[in-house]
Image (cartoon, rainbow, N blue to C red):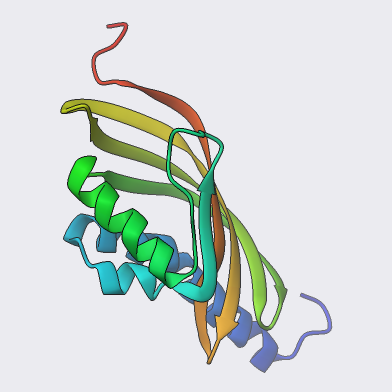
Length: 147
């Protein structure tokens, strides 16, 4: 922080807070089935992918909308975000990691997924958005399995 003006420090705080709200708003949009809100959290060429080949991937607003609409109906996900770490890379770029628990349905039965998102963020028109979200799934099992 040495050598930064008070204005620069305040802007960094504002940027961090805006970025920190993205995963929270993401979860809120999923819970509320807000397709427009969900898609608008991403840049026009934004993408989401996962390390699990059985789960969908999407690139761009049209694919994101289709993917989340299908997933909301079939899996009924209920995501919970934890431990968000942010690294500012400049006035319009940042990266971050946040940990996630997702309660969902698979074949009509309750499952729990845990893992983390590695995110890239971009500031577009003065607003922070997801450029990409890469989900690493650490655990994906039926609720009650092994108990």
